[in-house]
Length: 120
Image (cartoon, rainbow, N blue to C red; front, side, top):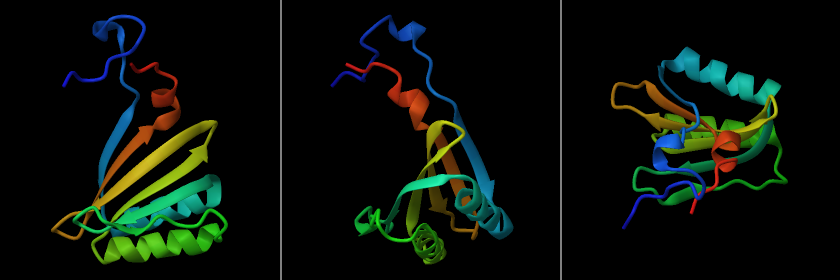
């Protein structure tokens, strides 16, 4: 199976969107959740256990505060959490992965930049 390449241009002309990678301690996780709750428009919250079975994909009609609280609790229990939100004119997906040492790995991608690329 060939990897996906842009439908226009050559693979060498393609630029991946900016990806942020960080490791957060408990206060860092709290700051992240606070920032999303105060400064972003929440689109979706996806929570999955370590086997990647769905714990809860959220209800778009549910209050954003409740969904973020549920995601924070699931993360503390060891679930993988993905926050999808709009901020500063772009769609962001933050994937939070609990680590064995109690910290959390954050992978953040600008989905708006990714969606603007043409994939074949």
